[in-house]
Each structure stands twice: as structure tokens, then as C-alpha cells.
Length: 205
Length: 316
Picture 1 (cartoon, rainbow over the protein chains, first blue to last red):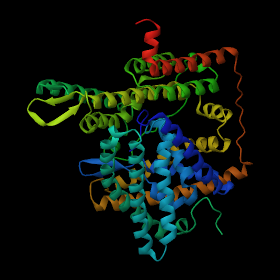
Picture 2: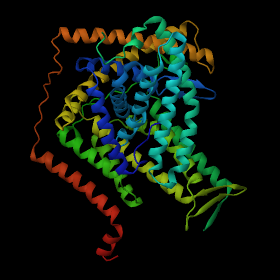
Picture 3: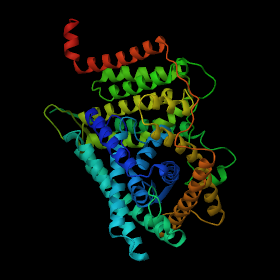
Picture 4: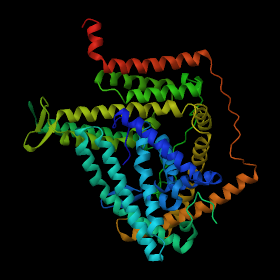
């Protein structure tokens, strides 16, 4: 779920812009300068992938992908996700212009978390990598939901109810995201394992 | 605490009206989405999401088209931030009027604006339902109870809060049309860059914007291939597995393309910066308009914050 304009207090919106800017700066710093155009083109692929609707019972959910972006791009993930959100807001109005900073934090920090988790305990045998990828993606969505709830809660007591329901709404998304990530990672392990070994944004040795 | 009992037929009328409004938003915004030719495949395809273009629409030369893009972006973004800080109905109404007026002046297609609104409608509708149910009751809040449904009580303040959020979201969404659709996207990004956003980010957004269309095309071709081979998107493990492979394939293909694109860029002498032929020249007129917008935004904000004081000053 992307926040629209006007939900957050303006101070929080501006503050999260500053925080997001800082994270983007860190992300650029940690990315090899020559890789930046590649990250941009890859972000388009993630953007397009997030347009797919996954059927779920009577409705469908669209993929958030913080976990997979983190696993595939490592430190560059925040930059990638932030730019993806900018374009999403420009093109579709998914997420408001003034809420871009907040939405960036909400998706970007979980992506870093998933990247860290995957590097940390992943890549011990194929099955292990798949399980860790699923867990990391699910955890990333859970973290995104918690950040969303925290941001909503800055609006005061009136927003607590919405925050709780927003977290609950992320539970099915979390499951779908974890399962899809497991399938994607097991596919990549068979077809192009080097994508998982060196995340993009760092020169391959 | 005052309690208002709403008869069930009034509630039914309200719900029907809201449903009809959202349905018409969806229909009007979405009907131009798909060409007649590919309706056969698209009707079943969840991968079909057309991507709107950010470019000058038509050949209109409105005020927004002639305004210096830097001044335009600065003014409209500032106005948006001020608009989301408003708290009172009257000021939000003025903001809505300004946004609607800008849309009319810019002359961008109404359908695009409607699509923006329908993209947000789900989120906003959920807020409109949840907030009245969950906002805690304070002293002086009006409790609204449906006739015959005593266990559900709506807080009128929740409706007001959610309505305020809807108004803000609509103002900014509508302003995005004159902001983005009255200059070619490359000019808009060049202007954003002159305003101090790092050149690196602007170039990445331009590249992304270009390749989103390429990858969407690729994805659609793959999707048609899957559909032809009998894949149907349903709930269940199988679909998830197939979608996982689909995404994996999309990633592999796009990473390979990424590498080729980058090498082609290097061959053509890419050194980290795209050459730009965009020249900006802001006249005093442009600055005056910007000053007017910023002044109006600040005025609206001041009026919103010190409404009581202003009223007293004017002798109400």
C-alpha cells in the first residue's frame, strides 16, 4: 500500500524526504559509479514486474518486490526503489508526490534489510538460498508494514486504527511475496546463478 | 455526545452513490486503456497495464505550456506542499478550485486526470470506511448509528478527517497533470536538474522512463506466449510457481539487455552525462507568475492557520 498525499502531517512528510535523501546518498556512495546506468535500466524491469497482479482468492495483489530488489541489487536497492516510486507516482499516482519520501523509506529500508539477511545467511546450497530468499522477502514486507504503521501513527491517536488494519492487510501480501521470491530465486539459481552471487552495483570480480 | 440515527435507506443511497461514482471513475479512466484489437488477449491478462506517457499532449499552448518549466515546477510543488498542510474545509475548497482551474487552463485530457484519481480511489475509499469506524470518540464528537445496526457506530470526526485527506490527495493528483503533461519529459527533468536535484538522479529517471516501455513490451510478449501455451492466472500454488519463473525470466532477459544497453552507450561515447540541448530563459513574467503562485499558497496556508484571527481582523 502506498501512502497518498495528505495522510501524513507535513512535518513528517518533509522529514521523511530528508531521511530518504540521506539513504539515497548512501546508496549512491555504495554503488560503483559506472553501474548507475545499469541500475536505472534494471529498475525499469522491477517497475514493470511490480505491475503484475497476482490472483489471490477473489481479489488480486500487486507485487511490492522490496525483498527481490534487495537480493538482486544489494546496497543500490534503496536508490532503485526510490526512483521506481518516483516514476510510479509520476505515471500512475500510486503514492503521492509529497509522500514520496515516506514511501521511499517504507520500501527502501526493508530492501536493504532483505539484502543484508540474504548475504548474511544465504547461499549455503540451493535449498538454503531459496528458503532464505523467501524468508527475507516475507520479512521485508513485514518490515514495510511496520514502517507504514509507524508513519501513520505519527498522525496521532486517530490513525492508530488505520495503522493496525494496514498491518493486517499486509499479511496475505507477505505470504505471496515470500512464495514468489522463492520461485524466482530457485529459477535464477538454475538459469543464471551469478545474478545472485554478486549483487548488481558492484563490479564483478 | 450527540447521536444521529441514519435510516437504512439513506445509508443505502449513500453507498450506492459512492459505488456509482467510483465505478464511473474506473470506467471512464480505464475505457481508453486497451485498444480494440488486443482485447481478446488482454481480458485474461493480468500483465496488461498500459503505461501512460509523460509528454506534451496535443498542440495546445496554454499558460502552463509557455511558463518556464523551472518556475512551473517550483511553484506547483510548493503549492502542493502547502495544500497538504491545510486543515479547514474552506481553504481546501479553494485549493480544489485552483487545481481544477489549472487542469482546465492546461487543457490536458480529462481522462488522464481521471485515471490518476481512480488509481487513488481504492486507498481513499478504505480510509473513508475505516476512519469513521476506528477514530476514538472524544468529547463533543457526533456518533452516527445506522438504523437497525446498533453494534456499528461511526464517528463523524472520522468522516471529516478522511474527507480532508481525500481533498488533499485530489488537489495534488490533479496538479500533477499541468505539472508533468505540459512539457516533454526530458525538458521537465532538465528543469528539475537546474533546480538542484543531482544530475545523476535525473538521468537515471530518464533512462528508466525509456526502458519501462521496452520492458513492458517484452513482458507482454512473454505473457502472450504463456497464454498461448495454456497458462491461466488463477489462485493457487501452480500460478505462483509459473509467475515466479515468469518474473525470473523477465529479470534474466532484462539484466542481459541492461548489459548490452550499457555497452552500446559506451560505444557511442557515453561519459556519464547525456548531452542536453535544452535552454531555459525565464522572463520577469515567469517570475511574476511564480511569485503569485507562491504568494497564493502562503496566503491560503496563513488563512488556514489563523482563520480566527483573520475573521476578527475583518470584523466578523
